[in-house]
Image (cartoon, rainbow, N blue to C red; front, side, top):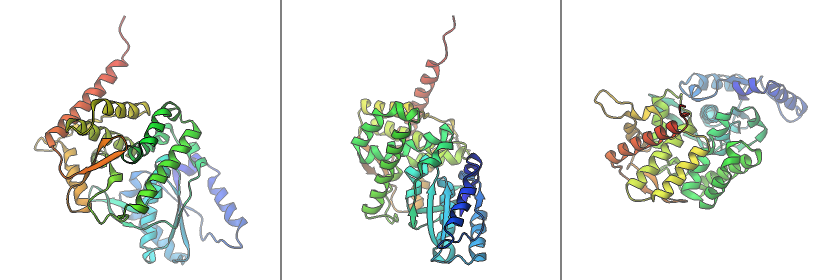
Length: 351
């Protein structure tokens, strides 16, 4: 077993519960060593070192294709352990137990595994379906508010491109979700995971041999923002900004109405997300915005044509193969203006 050390600190009895479980079922289960613990978050994906440590344990304890590597943690840890599992013996059975809202709703239920390299997200990886995924809502109880919120945006994303009714439900429950009411959180996670699984199972391209990644709506800018912020901006926070950027761009290109865009941006804000980060305006040596290079990196990750998902209306995404860069830049400055207006509105008036 591999576990997120922050989760183990937040729930100090968790490791003992794991050990007791295996001891109670030792007639049919053998835990070959105490659970390994690693740092969670994007830093755990920034080198191959942890993958090698897991490989070493797999070899040392004779874990084979009929044995299991179980990972308990957030999406980054699951990505890293999944890569180790899928490459040892060309694939050891891997069980994921996601411990964050984001991983339970999205990344933990997919088929992607990977680590970062050359300053790019998920440059080294493999598509390997997990043997099983178990979502245990009790694991969310010790999350910070920031991490509880982080996964909400993936539900907004998939609702926007796939399920208008689900979007309406999120909008209706926004206040309860922002207050982290348990039952709406569970319903959001379950439906979001269900929509992701349905896409993977039925889209005809589960291993992304084509050029399109509709479930990465809003992600071309998000991945670059994470990198530019040295991962200070969490994945969900970056995706919120990326979605905001793409819906404003869709309005500027005539695909969405102003009312629909304002409705989407207001929902994202009401869930507790910011719509702008200063990293959007970071420039390279030539004075060009660095975030724009995220478009080519997004294309290069799959190869083929640039394929960006935009919205035509709520619940209906469509694909474009080029982006009007001046309009992208205008959209960035519009988000900065909206953010500045929000900040100004909360400054108390002087007497």
